[in-house]
Image (cartoon, rainbow, N blue to C red):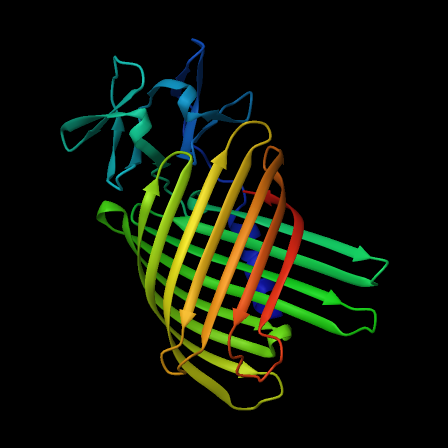
Length: 342
């Protein structure tokens, strides 16, 4: 598991390297009457990112933009989940964007556009992600804890591939180590009307629950109930096949589980920039009647300076009937870290 995480981190760093950009001839007009020329990179979470020659990357709140102009093609996603690929046409009314495609054009109000993506030509241009790490030590309890987390996403017009992982290592006063680690590979296929399919291959270790390695394969169907420039709320349901290897055991255990989940994100752009994300997942066992696993995560991310951020998160892992026979059915903790987005 440790070697896999190190290899994935090296891959994330490699693909985040510099790439060639197109001409910076896009123009963005803002509410105070000024305009900025550069390269429109994306609209995401209510922020329009524009890359300029002299100011670097500039992030503008979408509500402050009155008009945009570009000679290049983009993918546009509306609040109802509709996706259109085309060029930005001439707009005479503020707060409206004209998208031209297949010899036709449609006009959208800015408030109905939740995402704009470049049609990038290279693999590296399509990769976005983050890397964070933290360390804490308490003298009174003589407990040290280190954590590491990373996430990389490669997105095309209709699919997103995500590689993410995290690890927490704690050492108590008597020198007994305790580790928790997760690694997952996701593929999301976007459908019409805000529907999507999700497939995931995951690996998990948790010493507190006596779990040496859980390998899982998930297939689910989901839908975004809310999708705006300031928030998203999604639900999903599916099936999960697991293979669990317990600490001290040679034989593994297989299980078939259901999946019910809810994800929520909220974005605040006043200084400092703040992201709130939360997820709750329940895994009722089908083959082991009465057993239920749950996973709850919530995180606050503050942008300290440009792409540098501070993260505060809480996790709670529950298993009503740990197969290891462990007395502990619950593992939870608070994690702080400093990270970088690319």
